[in-house]
Every structure is written in structure tokens, then in C-alpha cells.
Image (cartoon, rainbow, N blue to C red; front, side, top):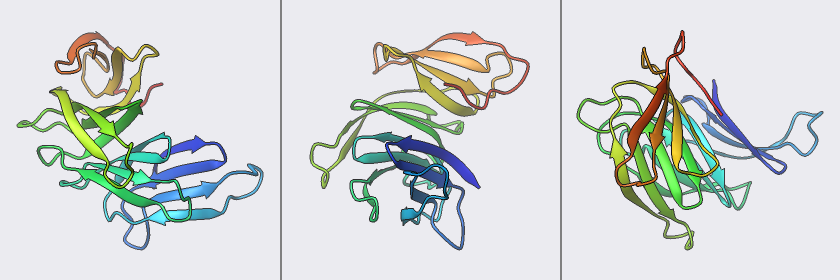
Length: 195
């Protein structure tokens, strides 16, 4: 099952749930949207690839791998995407969503009683063979975070959650070391996506 898709130029990047008979990351040529696109490249993860975000020559993915919740893929060669860096987020919670904006990376994971499930990181890709990820700030939310979206000023993140009385929650990230819940919106059901 497909989990996420991003389109940049004439390339579509698609992630899927774990598939015992094939890859979970695809690069598809969508030059002609009226014809089925050719698969240009793939990667096998043997785990669910739940979300992706694209910036420059890199795809940032959130996975269900307990030691590699963040994986950064060099997509500069569409035919041969390769993993440039992995990051083990504390705990065993699956990565549920990921966003990249400039050098700032945002990760949500499924709730974990002993570890925060929202994190802010900085990423340095200036040397593609030595990508670095550094933790900046984190917080715990006692609910599933199903999706995230940044505001245009990059000073708050909106979360689609399963929280019964706050399915949409905004997080103040003006001080990235200490993200804090800012406001909630109560919806009649679970929020699963937002933009």
C-alpha cells in the first residue's frame, strides 16, 4: 500500500508499507502525466516507509525501523537512489511523519511512554557523503501524530492527531530547543492529514 507521495519537477517519489517481494521507495518519471510513468529507481527498506519530504537532492523518510526512524536518501541520480544517513530516534516508536524546511527537520513518532514523540533536528547536507543530523528540541504528546504541516513563517507546526479534544494542535517552535503546545482545535473525529 502506498503511504506517501511527493512530486518535484518530472519526478514522483512514492513510499509504501513493507513489501516482502519488493522495494518501499520508488522514483517515477511523470514527464507525461497521461501515460504510466517509468520506474527510474527503487530502494528496499524491509520496513514501512510512512512519510517523505523532499529538499534539493535528498528525500527524508520516516520509517518503522526501530533503529533508523529517520533515513536520508540521496536522489541526485534517479536511477540509483542511495541512503546517505540514518538516525536512531530514542525509543522504539515508528516514525509517522517527517518535514524538511531549509536545514530544519521535524519528526513525529507514534506515542511512546518513555520518549518524546515530536522532535526538531538540524541537518547538514553540504557534504553528501557525510550528512549530519543533530537533535535540537523535543516534546511529548499523549496521542498519535498522523501528519504535520509548517506555517509559512516557520514558527509553528500544525499537527493532525488522534487527541479526542484537540485533533489539530499547533506547536510553537520559535524557540526550537523547547517546542510548546500553543492551541488546539476540537474536531468530531480523528485528524489524519493537513496542509
